[in-house]
Image (cartoon, rainbow over the protein chains, first blue to last red):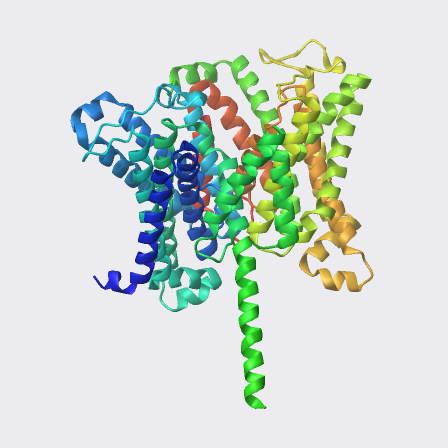
Amino acid sequence: MTLLIEFRRDLLIALAGLVLLVAIGLGIDHAWPRDFLTSIFAAGLLAMSLNMLIGYTGLVSFGHAAFFAMGGYIFGLLLQSPAFTGALGAGSVPVALGVAVVGTGLYAVVIGAICVRLTEIYFAFLTLAFQMFLYSVILSWVDLTGGDQGLMGGIPRPIFLGIDLADQYHRYVFCAVLFVACVMIMRIMTESPFGYTLRMIRDNATRAAFLGVNVFRVKLICFVVSSSIAAVGGVILALFTSGAYPEWAFWAQSGEAIFMIMLGGLNVFLGPILGAVALRILNDVVQMYTSHTEIVIGVVIMFVVLGLRRGILDFVKDWWVEKQQARLAAENRNGQE
Amino acid sequence: MFDFDALAACMSTSACLVNQATSGLIIGMLLFLVASGVTLIFGVLHVINFAHGSFYMIGAYFAYTTYHITGNYFLAALVGAVGAGICGILFERLIISRVYGQNLLMQLLVCYAFILIVDDLVKIIWGAEYLAMGIPAEFRLPPLRFAGGFVPPFYLFLVAVSVFIGIGSLLLVTKTRFGKIVRAAALNAPMVSALGIRVNVYFALLFGFGCALAGVAGALAAPVRSLTPGMGLGILVESFIVTVIGGMGSIPGAFLAAIILGLTRSIGSVGFPLFVDGAMFMIMALVLIFRPTGLLGQGAVR
């Protein structure tokens, strides 16, 4: 209850955002905005959950897409199994969602317990290595995962509580609700004392340990939660594409997510989503002119990293802060006269 | 998943053992060359070259083209190494040197962008298809028989070159004037530059040397592996595993770890073909849990 009161402003904003998203999706009589926004929900959750590690905790993970793919695959595999849908009937979609999130979380506990002890470079290394491990498992375990073809033949989606996920409107609203709920969870986590503990660890882990923070445990909790949220992103994409593909676990997916964070802004809560939107638009525009999108994206990354040296929203924030300070300084001067 | 009968049958015949050991050794040697480049660059410049696999790829493709034009493999290997080295120096001067000392995220992103650009360039120049170079004419000799197994002469050449280069780079860093300056600069760059030494030049040369090692590995791999625009990443991940197991910054450690991994790969392909990758990651996880600095690494985990 106190949570509701403390975060009432954020909750209201989230609710307004949800209403807006639903209005856009249902109001416009064209599939494009719904498809575009659904893919943003998936990519946005991946990028935002990764930013909990990179921006808030200072853990640069280069293997976060592994959890994204894991969520999508668990969800798809469960619903494709006749035994599972037969046993659970109408409840199979929510149960599959729950199992995908919890299962990915458990996998993240194992991976996290090994990786989180290590700092900086080793951490980036290992997360990348484990991601490539998952990728090779997906590729080689053809009987289960379909290898490089991915999960083919569509994912059955039994109707539950009157929600028919085969219907594009129902599916869009369902994905929008999942997305906003996950964003809200991340907002609460990062603005709570726990979130400030994360920032403290990022800024000075040794000092945090002196103050009695169990650094390992806090990092691990953050790692597991962000991985589970990435899994929700994977579930949304699996619903959207009605399949799951090994590219989701490929390193380039993680690289893209990192770039979304960087492009949008590391130090602003909604930065990664802006980055996801910007990158998607950039991708679509480049694709209209050339099939060699990678080279253009690569050049853009170089420009942003070496030229701007920060993301779009970081840039705006810095500019805003500077302006405020200039105004304050001017007021102080006036007051003294 | 596990076929221990096949493994035991292989272990009991010397022919199979020799064949698996040699193929393990050449995998290990290629890994060693790439990993020693990563470890050298990290040891001095404290950056992880996440784009190191790209230089392996550049070396392989340069060697491929040179061999096709001249028909001389030795020249092709040299062009592969030097070409990768020059690309490495350019990469260091133009791009990586701008993110020294910045946080890891920036270095990661820059390397990510570089990999995207190089992979796409390779696709434009050489096409996206698999290319095969084949065993070069100089080495089309009957295989040597050794304890019942067959050893192609090219494998011997590959191992000999790798060991030679490995010893050479160890001596370069520990015994020569160049190595001393570079190590001093790694500890205190402003002091070294105050002594009138152009530190930037040395850093660029060292970076280029590390990339040339990857280029040699690519050129040596070209006859025995197929060439594709994504070939850099596979070896990059494996060479990371090698550096983690061997200990960051240690060339002998990289050598030991590369041989362990190479043998795991080749012997594993008989006994547990689907679990080869899994076995490599298990070894790495065990090393990290029980000896986080790596087998031969010194000092604290960074």
